[in-house]
Image (tube, rainbow, N blue to C red; front, side, top):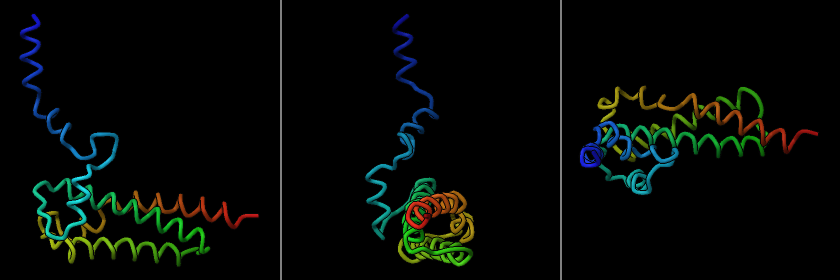
Length: 139
């Protein structure tokens, strides 16, 4: 009986193997090699999901940084939101079009890459901005 079990364990399902090699499978943290690949301009992206993950996490980092800055400055209202949107979209557009020089059509076009993870980063930006603004400037 244990011989059958070992054989079954050795031939795991393809979905389980893909999950084990997925960069975000271990608690939502990207692998170090993926980050080094993301920071080199000559990287080849065989797996489209890896590149989309990089775009997503870069957006989250930008959201936290800008949220802290906007809270400290103190920036208010629509101007802060508009500047965040321009910086967030602009930096990522420059990243994938100029730095990585990928073919946008492979990923569904420029608009698909520009909006990848945008709403999540916008929500994170608002939370961080409100927390820092309230903590520093509220009497």
